[in-house]
Image 1: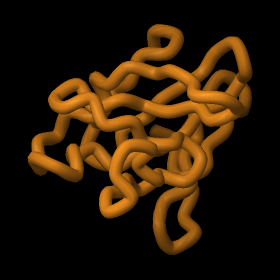
Image 2: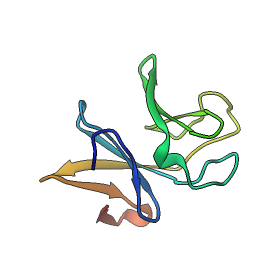
Image 3: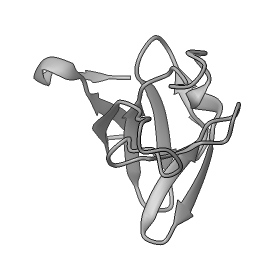
Length: 100
């Protein structure tokens, strides 16, 4: 995986912040259009919140909570993740852990 770039093989998409050693699983589908483009979104920050911006309409979604910073009616599914022994692991629904 290229640092900071998302990859998507099914769901969830994976975003990594290499400078901070963080990984997050994100829902792939843009909540506005339904298009599977979130993995291509840009990472940024607003105050102490790190977000991914949809590449289509630029709504910003908090990486920790999935909350849309621009529209309280929108949200994105998120999963906690970690990097262990060079493998990115994302917590999937139901408590399963699967390397992505």
